[in-house]
Image (cartoon, rainbow over all chains, first blue to last red; front, side, top):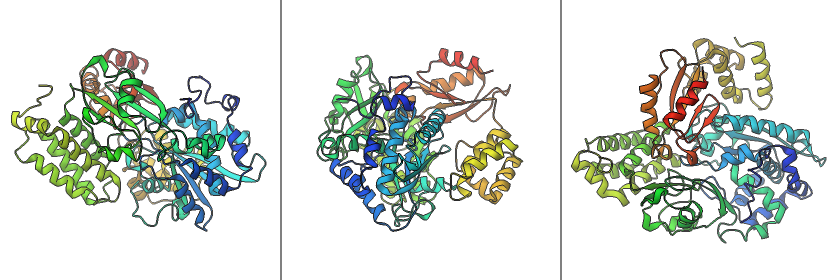
Length: 420
Length: 154
């Protein structure tokens, strides 16, 4: 498949506006400014674009809600708080193809009649901040951003807002709180951000990869775009593969590519010819899969039918040297650290799960610990403000679902039974 | 008090937002850069310039992992140990830093040269294990490579 989102990233000057324009950059914006906002939303609807941040929500639907709200000004926020462990798909766009995102945001801004946009960039990407700020300045200079875009009287201003190391700010209402200068704690919904978002105004929050699809959709038309990928989840998808494969990295493939093909065809199989033990298919919050469950098409609709989720498309591959108790424990250390503390089931639950997993790993697990883990997880699931708590609970449930004997052996042997 | 250059920088940042409160996170970054860490003076400077109570500034700052509540070394090592890095040996690298440089997670080396912070995924999983030193990414780390890298940061 021809690369649409990662086009030109091998060119060392790909972040420069001149280079971007050489290969058709900003032509979609030129086309979009001649269109009515509603026409752009209709193209996105025809394209069937779903949000690439993890939830897979239909973009045109979110946009329609925000457009229907009579309040102005409206805001467009780009979620560049890529923090889901295993995920590094947005970083190449931010660092190597920033104008694709900027063009996508300018088109989206016009579609939403949003006059202001912010890119909420995670603090851990300092290089991307400088690259984006330079690219934004270039876009202003060439009239792709500002108060009179391409001389058509369209206004869209864009700035970068740097986060400071809180995973939770990837949740859209926490991101909004953080942008407003507060702790990044999620808000209760409703009201939804499309009605009451940042600065109490209608706000659309979309992921970097989502917004970067806009130039392609406007360029080729929603109808043609919808032929890429699967009918329910059209478009290209950036998969990022890490762990024990021969060729880890980012791969732009049609949505719906099978997990097995990603691992064995595109990434060259398991490193050193070792045996596959487990795959986390969509970032650490998505349910782990054993080797006999990887024949699933990677998209938002099919993955739940196969017991997991597409998430961010972050595939973590583990060979048989990896201890599942250890991975599960490490994941829960992460969730405990990143729990924002606002709601009790998550704040307390992540800590208890981490503590029990820790003692099992250290050879101090007790009989009944596995059932206790499942009881704590069940008391978190569906009872938290935001999906962080659900993620933590389902990680534990699924590691135990597929690897329960390994947990039992740890408790019985009072030590790690995988790595001695 | 901020330097006049920082005050100017902050004015520019403030102009990007409809409220001055929204400039709080960037202002804390500037304070951290200027004072080295979030000392009582740093908090005072942010509170004064944005007209936000000091307690609010502190409440917000302590929520975020990248704001430093203690003085740090001249160079900040941010090493990831999350799953993708862990399964490729990141925890051995934590031991290496401890044994060869005397730096423990959350601590500063005795000569004040390095601080070490353990990170929760820095988005370099395909080239794990990975770390940031100050603003620079280093990937595919080995003990030997870390020794070469750290040598550059005096």
